Image (cartoon, rainbow over all chains, first blue to last red; front, side, top):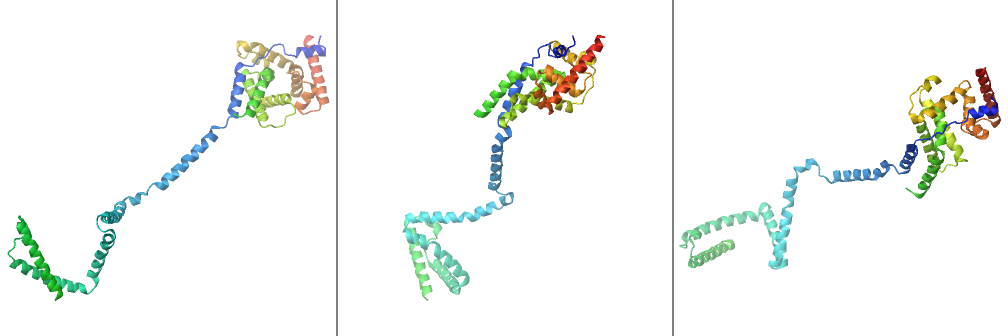
Length: 175
Length: 168
């Protein structure tokens, strides 16, 4: 007894050691988890896309301060399409070129001339005389007033009266 | 998961199946607690898996596994504040019925190696209990093979004297 071999024999395992069944399962599960790409890496493109979408939304959204100016802009913008529509509508009806070109120009020219140029005074004077003449003509006429027109005869008389008034005006202008 | 990873996982599974009981015994004979010993083995096996995945050159996978579990045990004792428990106290610790036998074995071996210096006790464990060769022990302990042999001889002689004294 107590030889080296005996001692070595005593120091050898005397029973069986068994690891739990879950050890293998746990090791393999953790190894698979490590082998798969991490969730943060998978989420990263989505997070980046969300950030870009947010920035684009912020750029596209109008600032709050301009909300009051909106109606003004709209008011300024409205006439332009209206004239365009009018012009577009007038084109097919009447002579296309003349109607579209002549209609807006004289209005602008007249409005400017009335304000600035000297002939405006003449036109005002003439209009005064014309007005007087018209008043005289209308007083002297026996024809009915426009409110009293009911028959074709009255219309005819009114037309004659108008023609007469125009001729009077022309005479005054020539003078 | 790509084919390479699947291959590495298959390799790991093979190591686990072949070596898990040996590794568990190695860890248990040093730690004495089943759960902790299994955690250490798991840690060691995962480090082996990482090494295989990184394709780091390993001369011998078996030797690497032994070193991994040995280092894991050392780390365990570094992390966990050492609690000095006498062997009689350890014998009386509550263990499950299934672990009673291995716990008694743990106490028996440690009682025999208790009077030896730490290095010699570890060397005897590696040689007799874990059945490693002197070359493997020398590699693991980073000592010359001759040193390992002489230390072992001293350790056995010491145990022999101790047993003689007990017999008297």
